[in-house]
Length: 157
Length: 157
DNA sequence: TGCAATTCGATTGTGCACAACTGAATGGCC
DNA sequence: GGCCATTCAGTTGTGCACAATCGAATTGCA
Image 1 (tube, chains in turn brown, red, orange, blue):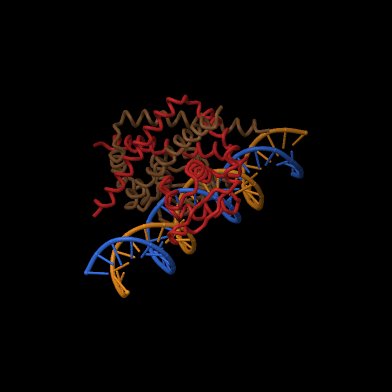
Image 2 (image 1 turned 135 degrees about the vertical axis):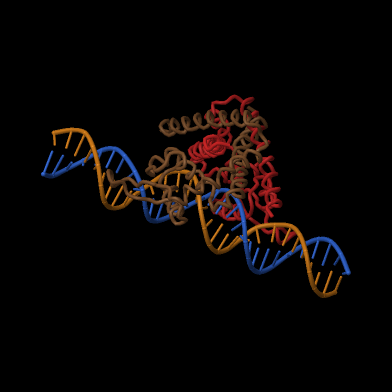
């Protein structure tokens, strides 16, 4: 392999990982603008989406839905509680677990959030089929990357 | 529009934005493992890629390549300087500007980084054509989202 | 030439991601 | 019943993203 072909690889690599990173941050920027009215950040919005769909959940389950651990969720949930959108209460059955319950105010916010998806979809300029196709590719990518990270950890010896 | 169809929209929306977010973080996790040997984080690696390709650059140009501002780059570059990989020096022509120059050690790191792209590509399990197709979609998405964010700011009055 | 607007970087503050660790609670097992 | 590994949430520490602001340097223009 010549030096120049290795350089090509470096550039190609940069493009795929960088494109994903840039798209993620661009999405974040659009959400930041749209969610400002609701007083939510993008990760907070994701938490509320899960709670709106599933109702009260322990932190653990919430983290499984969102692929986030308690180190990220604990302070985030405290901020949502401070904003009056959720309550956190120790489970009666298992004192280790904390149930996250949307308040009336949190549930009411759902009405104001209904127009968000349409505005986001409009911002992408992609038709639904294209979005679904892209989403499927991304999910396959995530699955492959997670598997690779897991095997890399075990195979690193 | 019935409540259930609005709920469907909420779920659809969650899937596309969430898939992108998850893929970005999954990529980050794989890079974290692979770059650990080099002592770099993923954003630091991106900075070094740009420096390897373009040589010495002012912070401003670096930020344009990476879509990052000085608030992110300043502390990051200080850490790279602390690691001995770059030097930061005021431009002679324009005292406002700071030139970021890779050190000998920083340039030498390129050799050890050559195998990174291959390992990343292998981790995705995607063939090059598929990666390029996905990258093109993501770039179009980023462009549309940036444009939408820009118009949203001006149209928000 | 002198002043105003702009450019550039650094800094500050908020929030998220994640690794590592702590400590309480639980449940299995002898 | 008592011990021990496991399961949880929380905390700490590091690093990144970004908005807002500052101060110094530069540029444009009257």
